[in-house]
Length: 240
Image 1 (spheres, rainbow, N blue to C red):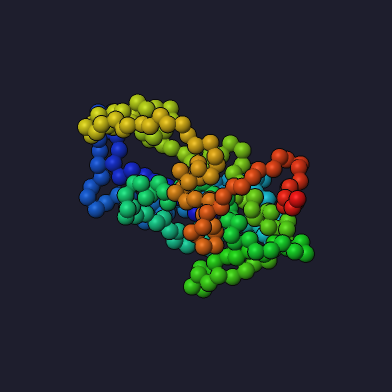
Image 2: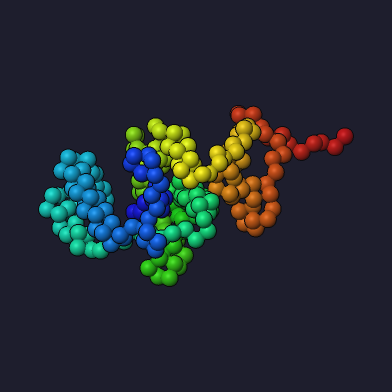
């Protein structure tokens, strides 16, 4: 499990009258942050278990027992969790492009799916414990669907959240104040119409084209004709 957080190294003061920058060479106390995250995460996980909100299936069904669940968490509480924080190498634009590849994609890409036969789904996966070796996994269809649905957010949860001066309610006001304190001009916003084709929107969000051939990466798929729903494709023209 992993989550990615994008945090500005500076920010607007609580009084809204000054711009505060962090000390050179310092951003966050990563070790303290990792232990705080571990404590809060496990505390909420335990509350969810006590409230009966967790469900266990297949090999994990034994964890339904409070004693077994408590034993399972013992080594997790003693393990040092990793909160990996670093400044961006390429700049803000590259950071947003990187995050966009995660926030606007599904759990598994079509290119990893190999076969569906005898009630099993076969797909490629990368074994990071053995030098990232490519392997093939075969799962029963219900188990594959269960794992896929683990990546579907429950109702009421958002994939992307904004806080601080980027929070939705006062974003426009606070961003204007930030620009005023930094003596930065207001950005020029293009009012050109947003692309309506999903492939153009995907390219705009991720920088990757769905029209490129997934094999060679150079050829382009071109739409020749669109058939109405329920109709049969036309055959080749007859010679007269």
